[in-house]
Length: 119
Image (cartoon, rainbow, N blue to C red; front, side):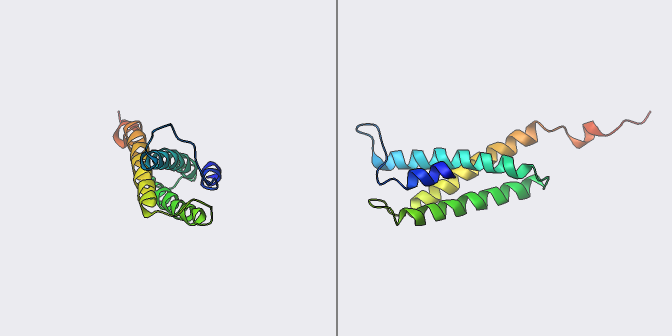
């Protein structure tokens, strides 16, 4: 969150020569909020709540942070809030949390295999 805040505080961001500002913005948001969602989910999973609840809370928190990030940008010279950025943040978080869900579900032993067998 600190890195995102720091980047949002800058009036201009570096980009490769000839790169479309819109494409760089979208890729930047996708990357930053994808990572944020994974890190937040990992932190929240330590509380032992159900997986679906944890991932839902993580998604809402990431999207709300995206909204506050856009509000913050409205105070930075040469920056402006953009609803497309918030939508991109939401998509990035959903993709990341889907990956977390898939990874945890596919690597968790099934209930049937963990039940003691009767002799």
